[in-house]
Image (cartoon, rainbow, N blue to C red; front, top):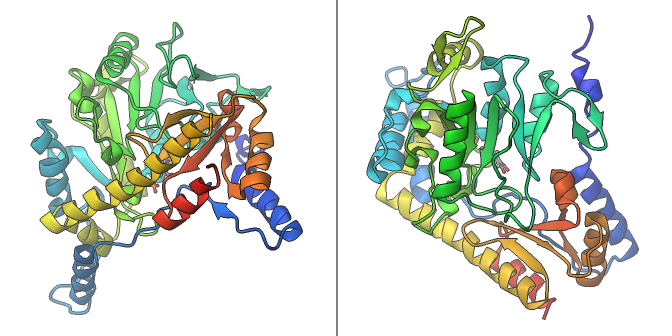
Length: 404
Ligand code: PLP
């Protein structure tokens, strides 16, 4: 058996293991140091009471043959898809039908799995810096080309920098699939309507597909900023939207999210005929996915109850307040800071410059704070660090006092 040698082309993903290695080395040399970890983007707040109750009842249902659930619908249970369509879309004036929603075991799986429905020759455009999963999954499926100086030859990099506020400009080159993330991990940048409208126009012109990763949409509190790409006219014909309950409701360990594939979104076959992507995605899911767990879907449904909605509001508010504390402390200390307003991530660099790993070491040595080096998110992240608001308030305050 010959392996998929695209895996051999991928360099070891060493970002978080290298962070851990350096952190351990520092701790060994400085056992008294009280290091505060602000590198990993994992949540700290627990599940809502209503979510736990819903899951307890679901577990009890599984204990009796009258109410037991075996395989569920591949697309997800109607009760959850209806709650999503009603609350996340209809209430905000967006027309998405429950049968255009696909429940997943999290956003990450679908970000990779969607590659099944577009051609191996597709040119993928990704923001640089960006969430590494976009590039790595493209490479695994043979869409990367060759790696030269940290860039893959067949990937179209959309450069983000301090000048464009990490909102990439429309490229002259053609892409078949454009992956946009708003609010962005790692930069915290959020697309406004005008810039998103330009991407929708680009996709229509180029007959491209936009994959809109809005895993952090609940962190957008500014009502002028779009939380869904379907707030932009025409997006329902060119965009797939991916969402997650992970960061908004403490679901990182539960595994549940959803993907919206409107009926109007189409790709083209080799003869140039339009083909519904929803149809292909449904076919893909029915073949390769047996649905998310019934118990977890009942837990997710409870997030749409008044208590669940209030819990999300409180949870998101808590992390946003952490982000605000970090942002203000860093600005006060003279750093150039991005994000941290409608996003849990704070992206910053030192006025003296320096590469990301040097800055990482300095922060660790001088402040005993562990961060994520920006270069791990792409070449354009060089010189930056990322901190996260996913922490306890106490740790956030203690860490930021070290800058005063
Ligand atoms: N998309 C982005 C931008 C993320 O930062 C993450 C997780 O960190 C994910 C998707 C994955 O989310 P999930 O836990 O739903 O797989």
